[in-house]
Length: 407
Image (spheres, rainbow, N blue to C red):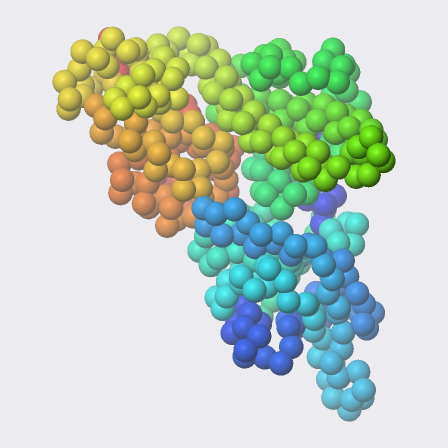
């Protein structure tokens, strides 16, 4: 299934480390950032006093981000000084995102194909920085912008890329929309249960075998289900928006709109985690691995997967036994990976599978020091550093680990 390219989303991008003058209004008379000749040629253009629509985004480590839609003006500060070299700057108004950014943060300035500027600020060394550096193929190099035009076809937007784009709210049409519509036609205008959607994703990819390559199969199934879900979601949301949110008096019911919007976001988050567990079950069944899902352990904890069974766990001494393994499954980690450490006290070394690309080296180091082994499907490991990949486990390696412990 064709998934589009990065060039379908962006025309160009630049990245830099923010200086005190860039980030702190007390150090500068203006809220502005200098741009380069290369950026004007690649994606900003050289129209003086051009006003852009801008989506300002601040992404912290393990925290919800900030988003603010506003404007910015690109101008030559020396236009009236013909004898001097041009000095182009991007002027931005104060807003919640620019107030949150600090000296040393990393700024990604990207222009979409629709002309919208994305002003993305991430903490230096954070997972967000690593993810966007991988996505755009750019790393900051000092205080000046490093930039590129995104004009080549490049690789398709895989699951990891779309995971990152979703963090900035970028929505786009599926290239194979008609084929997807045919598959979801049976659901009408209602969401099926997550397990039903997961089954459909696997059934429509019969040539994808978990027995042959569990890592590739898991990512392929998740990607197919995500595409199916977003297509059905678009249909249902469009119909609801056309209906409107007016009350009996014809006034806009803001509470009704907010409740609907919150429901959309909550459904996305809950469904992804559930679908990951459903597909992992299919992988374990294909490899004939004994497991229990959401078994009850100490203090009413329920790890996502316990191997091989509850009886073995209950019979084991408090120090555990070699046959026991547990696996947490989280589509994204952030700070939630620490929750896994408290589950299944008889198993000192935990395992956690995630679909999140490019988690920072600081975070993965903390995991290793806490006795947590991160499992990342092979296709997503390309977004991690070489040093991280040497430590990460693939799903295939985790299954082999289980099989060697089977009686």
